[in-house]
Each structure stands twice: as structure tokens, then as C-alpha cells.
Amino acid sequence: MIIKPRTRGFICTTAHPTGCAAQVQEQINYVKEHPSIQGPRNVLVIGASAGYGLASRIVAAFGAGANTVGIYRHSESKAGRTSSAGWYNSAAFEQAAQQAGLKSYSVTGDAFSAETKAKAIELIRKELGQVDLVVYSVASARRTDPVTGETSNSVLKPLGGTYTNKTVNFHSGEVTSISIEPATEQETKETVAVMGGDDWQQWIDALREGGVLADGATTISYSYIGSQITQAIYREGTIGQAKDHLEATAKSLNEQLSSNGGRAFVTVSKALVTQSSSAIPVVPLYISALYKVMKEKGIHEGCIEQTYRLFSERLYAGGEVPVDAEGRIRIDDWELREDVQAEVASLWEAVTTENIEQLTDLAGYRKEFFQLFGFETDGVDYEADVEPQVDVPNVI
Image (cartoon, rainbow, N blue to C red):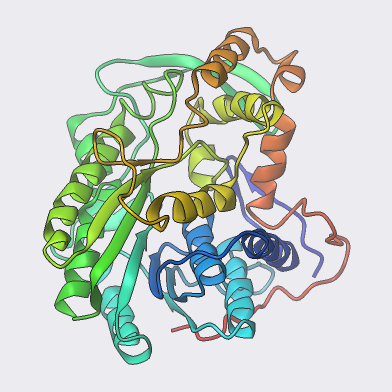
């Protein structure tokens, strides 16, 4: 079939297998073009099919030569419908890893479930013995707790009062004002349950109890802080409460693992175009302005550049890992430079529907959004007939 992008709000309901494969290969090539990393040997990535999870798997495998296990949702194509971009990304990664002689396995299912954890532990025990790096990179709007059976839904809302600011329809370029009502106490509680550190803790507990977490193992999870522009809707809102819980979990895990030489960190990354960030009001407009400034200064990074820098200059550089006063690894340092934020703030004040294409990198934002789903990739013939059914090797 000839596959074209079909959008509904901040999601694309189709994905292109050839485009996804090409983008995965681009990330692999980037890593292979840089110095190798003396890093982990066996890696578990929970939430491995896109974004920072996929980038972590690529850097571990092709930068450090590690064997990997990826956890993500099952999504094969059906009649008239494509698979998800994550499925196509994973298929391309698995094929490349096996061609490179690396052990690589996929466990598909709900990362929050006890069943998926048990499947992963059994696979690790059988094929790898133990893992020495666990990357937790799950983004989801809903979670059913396997212990309590309670289902929670996350919301993106401010706390304490109505929030009003600029936002953009990144498809049309229309800049408008948006007002968002504050979250209730229950909505905040559920957002923390979904996006906080509880499931990360459950994964580490299960891996330790299953005997498949190596002594001296490292575990990381990704977070974001951002600028003053996005504080009210992000870090000071419901999602910020969840990130606070995630960071508290990292400190607790670090204490638990340190007795065996292990360590746990939250990594604070920069703002990037992801399916999750596209759903947050205000954020796409902020990212469009940020991209403009960082590209002009020559300091823009995507997921793969950020993750390679994390592994090579922070986690596995030798010696103590540099952290901030809260124990977090910061790779958002270039985004939050004073000169960068001053210029972004100036653009923010001036931007309107009429001048957004000139003042910001909205075109770059749109391109990266569609690239999340395998579209707008250089060298791909999008008029060609392609097979939407793609098998993932070694999938369980």
C-alpha cells in the first residue's frame, strides 16, 4: 500500500516502515561515527520503541557493544492499517543489531503489568544471565497497578489556579491564547500514579528478586524541567508532581542499590519533539522558538545526540558522575543557558500567527513531528508501494 500521514490532533494514525527504518539507521550511523563507549554489557530498556528509550538502546548497542532487551507494546498491522512507528523502529533496530552480531530481544506487552515483568525476567535469565543497565523510559496516559488493580489516568493541568498563555496549532501555525483549569486532587494523584516512579521501583524490585540485576548495576529514568515559560503547565503542574515523585524514587533506588555498588539517576533532558510533548499545550510553541535559537547557535541536539552525550560524558566517562544539588544528571544544560533563554523569551513575547514562520522554527517542529512516524525522511520514496506488515525478529 501507499502510506500517507493521517493526523488527528497531536497524533499521526499511520506510520511508514521504510521511513522509520531509515531514521533508525541514521541514529545508528551517528553513534558508529563517534568514539566507542566503555559502558554496559547487558541492557534492559523499558519503553524502547521511540524517543529516549530507543536512543538509549541504540547507544548501548552500537556505542558500547551491549546486548539489549527492549520492552514495548505489541502493534502489528491489520487490514488497511499500518503498525505503530514504535513497531517499525523496533524491527529495524533488531535487524541491525543481529547483523552486527549483538544479542537483541523484544518483549511486547504492557510495561506496567506483572506478566510483562515476569516474561522479561525469564528472558534475561535464559539469554543474558543478568543486566547491568536498566533504562526506564515509559510514557503513557493510563496505568493499571498490578498490585492494587486500580486504573489511573494522567492529565496535563496546572495546580492552584487557571493557567493562561500562548499556544500554537502546529499544523496550521495559528497562535492563540489558551486557558486551562487547575487539576483536582484526584487528578493529581492519578497523574503521579501513572507518570511517577512507582512502576520504576516495581521493575527494579522484580529484577532484584528474580536474580537478574547485576551487582553494581545502573538504572536511569528521564525527566524534564524546562524554562520559566513552561513552568506553570509542566514542572509546577500535575506532570511536575509526577516528576518530583520520579526523582524521589531515584534517590530511594540509589540508596537501595548502593549496598551492592549500584546507582540510580534521573536524567534531565532538553525539550524535544515527541508524541508526548506535542500533547502539552504551550510546549510546541516553546520548542519551535527554542529550536530556532539553538540551531542558530549550533548547539541543537536530538534524542540520539543527547543520549550519546549522556553515556559518553556522564554515565560512562569514568570517575564520579556529575550531578546537580538534587542528584540529577543534567543534559539540559545547553537549553537552559542564560543567552538561549533570553532569546527564546524575546521571541515568545513577539510571536503571532502572522510572524511565527519567520520568528520560530515551526517548520522544523512540523518536520520532526512527522518524522516520529517515519514521514518526511530524506531519501525515502513516499509514492512507492510498501508492505505494512513487518516482522520483529526475536519478539516475545
